[in-house]
Amino acid sequence: MRITEKLAALSLLALMAGCASLNPFASKDPKSQPAKLAELTSSIAVRTAWTHAIGKAGGYALTPALADNSLFVAGSDGALARLDAATGREQWRIKAGTELTAGVGSDGAVVVVGGAKGAILAFDGAGKALWKQQASSEVLSAPVVGQGIVVVRSVDNRIVAFDATSGAKKWTVQRATPALTLRNAPGMVISGANVYVAQPGGKLLALTLAGGAPRWEAAVGEPRGATELERVTDISGTPVVLDQDICTVSYQGKVGCFDAATGVARWTRDLSSDAGVAVDQRFVFAADEKGALVAFSREGGQSAWKTDKLALRRLSTPVSYGRAVAVGDYQGYIHFLSREDGALIGRVSTDGSPITSVPVIAGTNLIFQTQSGTVTALAVE
Image (cartoon, rainbow, N blue to C red; front, side, top):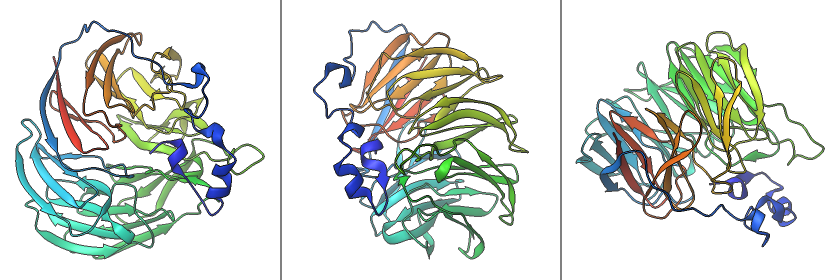
């Protein structure tokens, strides 16, 4: 799901009818077309370790979950499977009994997905149904599981925690929702005693995992502009926690890193992205809405490099591994760039469909899931 598919509000149809400029492919101007891929001699050793077909994601962003050396994957038709992360061997596969709209969240013992009409479905590590709950509205963000708690966010911006074993409700937090938001899946992450929740309106919220008490709220992007469309500034992707930092990015807002304990901004820079960030010890990487991939110093936010070689190719959340940063595109290509200077150093094709899920690192494998449901593990040597 990209910008032209993500805008959701009561006035959506009227807005979209007059906003053809939001579609990067609507114009016949060559400058408005996706960058063509030049011939490339790879300077990095990448091979396909394994692939697995789970089923189409449809209009949803279904991201694999890694836990206990297993990879949990889902398709929109209700398919849910546990794979060996190293080999791709299927350990079990079930049907959830409903269309799936969000997932997967797992700690290895409990596996949780979002289903049609706000259903929340939990299974044990062997694929046996544990419990079912009902959210107040549609669930697009993958649930998160940790410390015996499942946290779910629905599109009306209600955040609810459940006991992972019984499904009993533990706490609820309601936050306001702007008049116009992206129809995306702002992510959550559990770290220590907190759960960090990406929000519409450019807010990053830290809640105590045990009771849902607010720890802090930080502004990643401030709504600006004369129209509701110009004021959309939702956080994109899943925030990333590394050491004492939590880093994230917003649409029509900023990219930055914040103190995970206090929410105080370490640094922010103007950037608009509808995909999340990658973070390593030295850099923060983000793909902007025009397809430029940008690297910032994690320490102070200084610009390290920027490349537009993949302009308008609707890039996914990037991932940093070794000497490379990898990112998927709308044709299912995975591009490898030097993390030091952004030079293109390799390219791998998948099934030709867009990559919109968040990449997963599993040992020496980088794992991507396409919209057509191909889960591909790439071994980077």
